[in-house]
Image 1: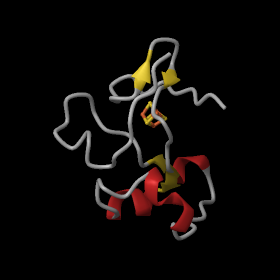
Image 2: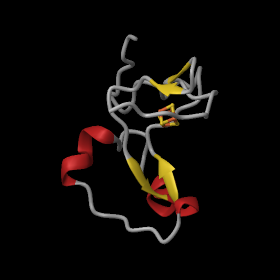
Image 3: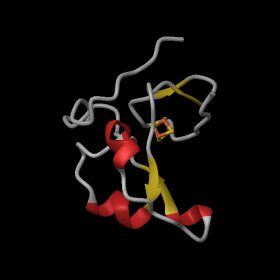
Image 4: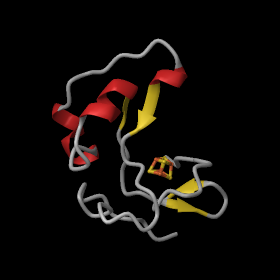
Length: 81
Ligand code: SF4
């Protein structure tokens, strides 16, 4: 499944608005605010569900700004297209 994304300052963003992360984790905004950078898709299978009422209350936990020193903290890797 392709993940399309327009957040072009993310480390995993690629031309054509493609996400090239090996996997991503979408959570509620509150979880995105509270969880550390190390909490990401690798922990998804055992993650606590975080329901949301609207799309505005969800966030991509895998987002990391290009050049951020925390890029490797979540152990997510970029895919090659
Ligand atoms: S990791 Fe999230 S924010 Fe970054 S490109 Fe992929 S979907 Fe977009």
